[in-house]
Amino acid sequence: MSTILREPSIQTIHDQVVSEVAQRWAKAFQCKVTIKTSLEQNPWADSRQQADIVGWYFSPSGNSIEWIAEVETEESLSDPDARARWQQAAVPGIPMYLLIPRGNKIVAEKLVAAADVRFTSIYQYNFFNGDVQIL
Image 1 (cartoon, rainbow, N blue to C red):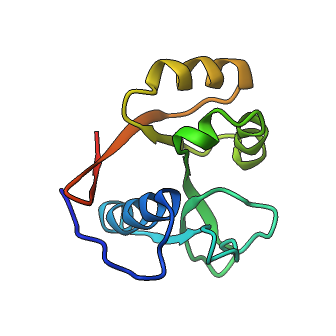
Image 2: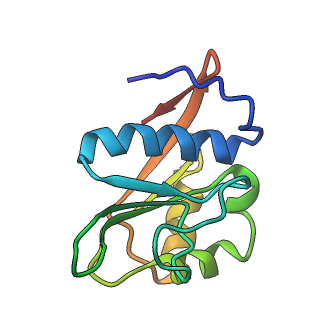
């Protein structure tokens, strides 16, 4: 599935991937989705949750996180702070997904193992004619 994203406010690869994945997964998972981009810095309902994308459900007794996703670019994947961000975003018992640029899976798997963070899946993305493709 490919959706053309032409929002003028999205200026970085990270933000474009975050926005596209959030739109698709909100439909697929039938839940509310909140994102954290350079423009949107208001995490869903818990100021301590700093994940790029959070899928959640509203409940009168309190919102519940259903899944978490982190998006990395080639630059951020090589950033030594990436592991610390993953550890901070992880919530025990909640599925967590990692999205990385295509061709970086081996590097990401090594970093994940060193970070001692368990991701449910690692997805790769690339761009085709300006559209984000999730592999």
